[in-house]
Image 1: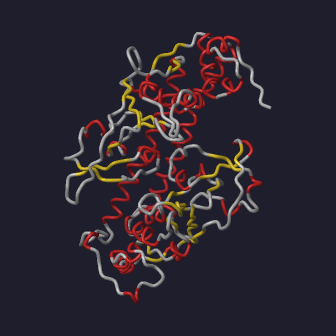
Image 2 (image 1 turned 90 degrees about the horizontal axis):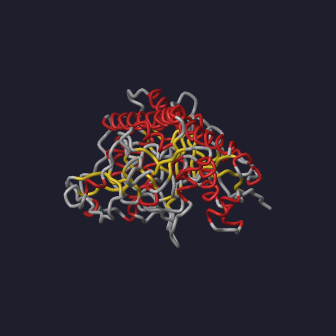
Image 3 (image 1 turned 180 degrees about the vertical axis):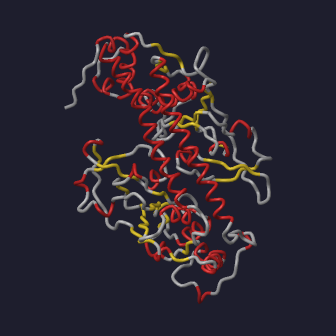
Length: 459
């Protein structure tokens, strides 16, 4: 039985007596805020007249996909923005997309998720994200004062901020909050010293992620520029001819795309080699019974989607009793992990380098692992696996009638480009910036929670 203490003033305020209502995280967070205000805590509305900034959302838009050769802009789906290195989902027409400027992202803008089963997380647009356009499915928050901008982001990402955001969500199937809902949020205004500490920590987190994203993107571009051109000479709609005797066990067109074997030969010619020669490929076999527990009783476990996220959304913790042997599900620093099951046209096969902050974490059986052999640079292995040249091979090898899958044997035969003259230690240094960014963000939200707790204890 769960027992909680509820202040009588809170019952009067909400006009309720039922226990279930007061046990909800959102109501408890609102009660904590009310208690803090009794101790003199000042607050401000996030948006609206007299608010801290402008809160708005673009109108719904009809996507006009770019035709070959047409001026285009990269389109990003909302939750893809939380990935280490987001990839455009589509290219939209720069000429035929109405109100295009309202969907462009601008550096310093806060993006607040407003729909979906995991709504709540927020992030700030950096130089890398400013390259994209994004739909109406994320609320825009623009705050002129830089210190306040980072401070607000930290509060939105804090446990209390997330609980308040979700308190009045609506929707019979898909959870939803509106821009007016976000604008009406009360932001606690701590002392100048506390606000500065929160802001500085969050600024560090945003800056480190920005540096890592921009640098990794540039390194990847430089690396691919030294490799054979992977582009097609003919449009896919023209098709190609294939002899029946060469079909083998696969009848799907993607597996017999002539561009892929041609690309493999070109990579081998310049010194490329199969994955199995430089890394051990692993993917856990069998199933486990799910036992999710509170963080103190389990270990964090990543899904394929969470693996790619700089800040895992809705991270869960698994009890040790869920596994006969936990070892096959562990991740180690310096390994490369990738979604081994999913959609070939989306994130299937995209690699992540396991950093120090995720050493010892678990990943589901839908995640593949590449363990570099002695003397092999994890930085190069990640960079090679992220190239178009390798991604085309992985996606061509995927199979499945509903959910696409890759198997260790598929990955072992993928041809990697040679290291060439890339400083791979620099790649690894950028990935460690993601670790430092996560720690800085945790510091910022911890200060927020500690300040609120200190005021509640005095109430």
